[in-house]
Image 1: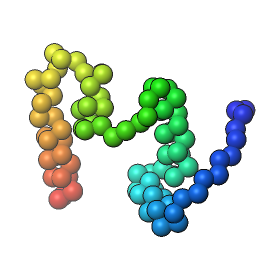
Image 2 (image 1 turned 120 degrees about the horizontal axis):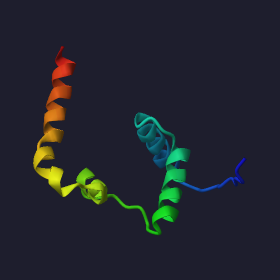
Image 3 (image 1 turned 120 degrees about the vertical axis):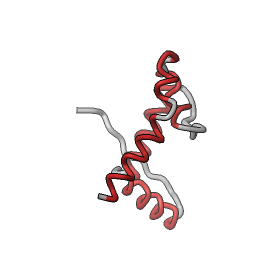
Image 4 (image 1 turned 30 degrees about the horizontal axis):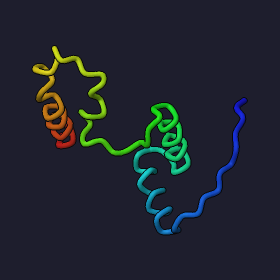
Length: 87
């Protein structure tokens, strides 16, 4: 069993409610997002911040040889997903 502590923070009630709704739409909770934020900060030694794009977040895993083959992959996948919703 892990050694856990409870945190208490003060936050605007409307902001908390909006955040809970947002995170629920992502399939997670406000509490889990806070844990992930702290874990990421400690793991990277940096303040987690929004990257410019998904490609920017994944750039450390990039395989330069695959870039020409993947260039339109996201757009093609989005079109396919949209087409499935029309059926």
